[in-house]
Amino acid sequence: MRGSGIGTLIFGKVGYVAMCLAAAIVLVVSGYAHGLVGDTTALEGGANLGSNVPPTGAMNILLMGLESRTNFQGQNLSEAQLTQTHSGKVGGDLGSQDTDTLILVHVFAGGQKAIGYSIPRDDVVNFPHSVTVNGAVITEGKIDAAYLYAYDQYESANIGTMGQTSALYTGANQAGQLFETQTVESVTGVHIDHFVVSNIEGFFQIAQQLGGINVCIAPAPASIEPDGFKGGGNLVDEPYPGAPLSKSNSGFDAFKDGYNEKKSGAQYIHLQPAQALAFVRARDSLPGVDIGRTARQQAAIDYIIYDFKHRNVLTDPGLISGMLNSAKSYLQTDQGFDLLSFAPQMQSLTGSHLKMSTLADAAVQNITIPGYPGLQDANYIYVPNLQQTVNGAFYGSAAVKAAKSVTVDVYNGSGAPGLAGEVSQAFAAAGYTAGTTGNTSAQSQKPQGDTQVFYGAGAETDADSIADMVGAQAATSVSSLPAGHVEVLLGQQVIVVPPGLEAFGATTVTEQDFVTAAQQNKLPASELPPASTTGTTGTTQSVSATEVGARAVAPAHPAEPAHPAASALPAASAHLAGTPSAANVKRPADVPAGIPCVY
Image (cartoon, rainbow, N blue to C red; front, side, top):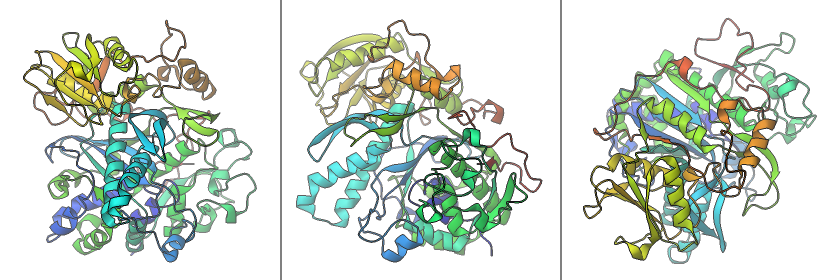
């Protein structure tokens, strides 16, 4: 039976796990197959987010795909596995624990609609707290590195007492999962209820059961390709124009699986498993590079959901059981993500009801990022626009607005000079009333490594929003606090402003840095900051007067808006003067509705 290819889509050198949403759908719907409870609960080996959102309610899920060539117990892939996945050789580069794929998904209550945003892995941000790796204190980097830094810090701190045991690597992965989740929460300003994280090999096992995928692919015009490509370079993955296929990072070659060169134009073709993998891994010759890859990943998700629905894959207990048996080595969820209870929501989700987009950024080349060796290619972000985009799509008009009636007190747990004052100014600029600032000795709570948020009567909703902005796990009620007060206790490891309070994500990125990059990228005016009255000093700025969406669990929070129409959703950001979605090409007649054509 020709399959739909979830597995081969997902793993690979870079971008291989973009399809974890499809994997999650398969796994949660597996709750309808009897006798699989043990298999599904075995997946809950990740970090504990402490979420109590009802399984039938709306929720936000972060999908993370690791670059690593190891499993969650720290075991390296074998030579055969590395060859199968086109991922290197034994003794070679086994990748790192970077999250090469980050997709934030909002599932509306009832599960019939979902919205997802790909977060470009090279976005430059502060981290919610510092990490120490190989003696270096790191406060800033690319967003995908949060998992890696926390993983490495945990491994360094514990290997002496734990040895190279599965417990060590389980703990390291949980540390990475928690820190990456906190970082994404702070940058986007929305609370994450659950996560799904995946690595390589298990997806290959699933691929052997399901086969390949169908894609609509069009040759890219030279005007939007990376420098040097002369049109159609996206049909064969080359690291540079004219490179032999042997140098390809993915091995993608559309002609191998039936693309007709003489016919040209957009074509709907079936990719065998190896080429399905390469399709979502390719990046070097695509318009927008990483942005082009996310468009392919989203197209693959659309097809998988469409194909599962039309072939009734989700009603085959034997097939699903086989997937689950291999899933334990590559797929984890947070502790408490009850897949069996969540399953009924997802049964009615179809590709046409899943809207995917990519969050806006401005690509830059050859910049210095603290802690990185040499100059880097990366992305600058404008946090207010990013948070408003996500909040608007997830929660519509039910945003939690900063309330002048709420006073925010800020205490500095690390002793970093002036930090409490900077954070307090950011909250005041956002619309809150600035309260007391000082060191931790001026309040009664015990400081921890991470930031904590406490609140008095009547301030719960704002406290939840503030917790997300600063990357804190939760907000806690404290009866001794005055009514209407929120207390932010910056953690002992917090030595810079959290990314959710920085206008441009990172301390070192100024307004002029972002504007220059945005102009070069031809970003629309809606993605640019308003004319500044403070110049380009790079000081911390308020993220927005309209803050983050309500957490989806509390009855006291605003009700969700109606499902947004597809036309109301923002399109994928058009980088490098082109659109990676190939939305303007002529669609072949055989392409099913809801399946996009991509470059």
